[in-house]
Length: 482
Image 1: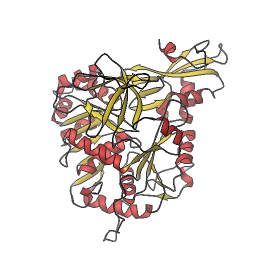
Image 2: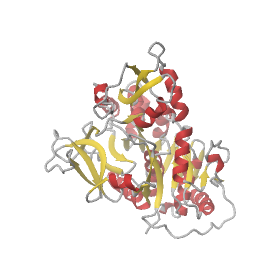
Image 3: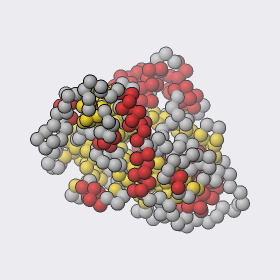
Image 4: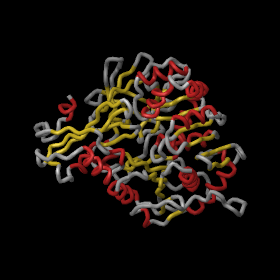
């Protein structure tokens, strides 16, 4: 099997990674990643303190060279969330920059820092390319209830999705990708870092999103931009009044939006100002990328395109029966199978078995219709408990559990509602313990942010005398949203 990153040994002085003022060409990246990989050899799993830095990118490549599964950790995780991930994945080591301040329990693990300037050539020898079915990543994803599950992604899955995207987007070594995505999930790490390195191109990471920085990089030779709808919404608000921004975007070969739907208004504003169409695609942590709009083809806002190479996709009805002749008016649940799907939920065989239908079809929980040309249009979740806000997928159940621990809360439910900037904002429906002294939104937001990642805090508060429940005692969230 060919190496996952063949350009490490063939691209020499071609640019590979740039984070602000820090950069590495392929020769330097090969030396840094190889020297670091030797120090990881033999580990069962390694936690990656996934700050948006050069250290994180080199650490991820090093672990993959060493054949050690990487567990990306969100630096914004709350104490409870972090403790669960570390306990559940049981890493032997933590990969983090030497000057990074690590919270417990990561601080208790042996630390390895990426060696960005190794000395003592020649490079140490590594083992042969690891087996394709061996684990590459364990990415934690929030479900609708309970703690996050560790999604085990094989090297086969990573390679398959990156090869399929390279074909669909004509992605080559000549491309320069700019983005500011977090590096603890699939979009930012797999597509945004491993993707360019897999094809031999380069990536310029901004550290944090800024419209002016995007403009500067695209004007300075970057050919591709990856973002989430929140980022493109801010671009859309600025582009009509900023001719230099419009010019820079028009020079880009490919603008890609993912993680949630991009509004028709933002699509049209960007296209009107630049002549460029933002390409949307659809994927999940468990499946990596499933579909994409193809650049250069007519695009209808709301479509996430057709299946990528190797991906089989079907719609099923509420009983799990395949829809024989789906049409734009018939909604079904998306099921997929193919080489890019995950292997298992770490340590959860029952949850893994429940995620698949007969024949190896993965139940995505996403509802969609199919256009006449086979393009997929996602219309929502089968459940109402997964909220997509600012590019993040957020489970309502874990937020509800934290809210219920607040002394001023007698009962709680969490839903999402449309937001022009975030896509969806988190809404807390609260029954106060004392109706005369209800908790404030700021108080509840601080409480949630103290236990979970800050982006999981509620942004709207609705006070009720009681939550609507069905005969089984479950909250009927559709009644709340109606």
